[in-house]
Amino acid sequence: MVVSFIELYLKESWLACYFDCEAHVNKQGCIQVKSVNPNGLKKVKIMLMELSIESKLYGPYNQTNGSPYFMLTIGRKEDLRKYADKVGFNHSEKVKKLNSVLNLRPDGTMVMRQPGNRSKINSKLAWN
Image (cartoon, rainbow, N blue to C red; front, side, top):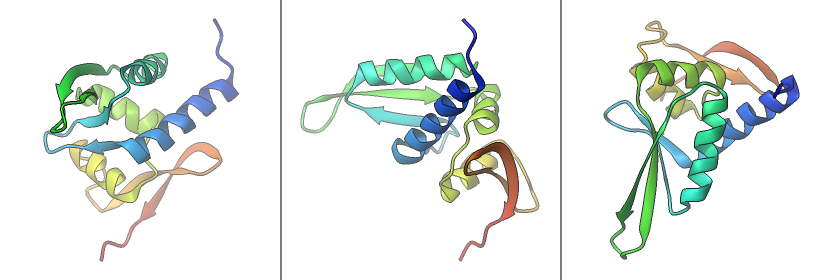
């Protein structure tokens, strides 16, 4: 099946928004998403696979209230780099953490998505 440019762009944009809201870069340098919806995470995993980004689904785990949750993890450095290149974060703190994990831009510049454009732009962010 041939995926059109617009379909690919929409998937990348949707994933960027989803991961901006739901994911974090943990202390081990992995991107993780916690959810009570395993079917939703399976669909996210498929979307990532369509972009050649490998992820793993773990769980169920029990929350303190006893309800189950699941974790989707992007952990291999190669896949983290693909995520940064193809999807990326718009959230500045998450960009900073991911770039730190990938040892990118030691001069402080970060690769950020330009809204409405698949290309990346460099920008200096002020950290107060």
